[in-house]
Length: 259
Image (cartoon, rainbow, N blue to C red; front, side):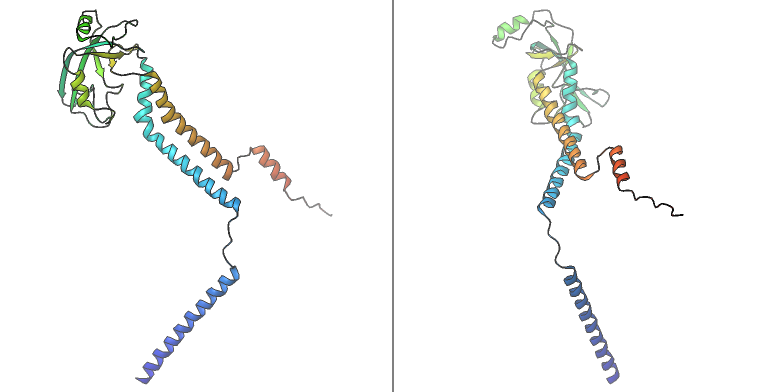
């Protein structure tokens, strides 16, 4: 028993000596290396500038993935459609409430552009095809009814926007169908000069241009400019000839053969 206790005591003492030695070595190494060096003002400025530029580049680049399909693509399609600048008069001729995937290849209004279509509403209208005509907003209901006798175009489809879909609160399909979806409804509208079978209830060219500028041009410029500055700060962006010239300058001189 005494031998077992003495061996245990010796092991404890050896373990304590080992720990003490390790602590002394760590303290000596820390004293030898000294305190960690402090960053200079230039290094701090470079670090925070790099972080800010990287954040801007990543954020602006990622935003393009969401803004282009949701806002930019519809705005470009609307401009390509070349809709009339002044509103003409539309009259709803019929409405169809359809069900089934094959019957709903399009919809006058749909909430959610990426959702599957199983129920849709088709609204058909006719309009006054005259570039000189402007919808009389101050006319009385009786005067508007008299205007319905004017010769109108062939039947066209009515869309809430060029894609026929959107998201609340901008697009509310219930209000849209209640307002324009009954036969005989008279309202101002805009038709495409490129495709006169497409009619929209609202159009403003300046709004579409501003959408493209704010949701594509600005994020794209921010992404490019921040990426270029990051390249200048951390990459060797000099041309190849200049780099070769510097390499030749620092090349070791050849040792002549003394023989």
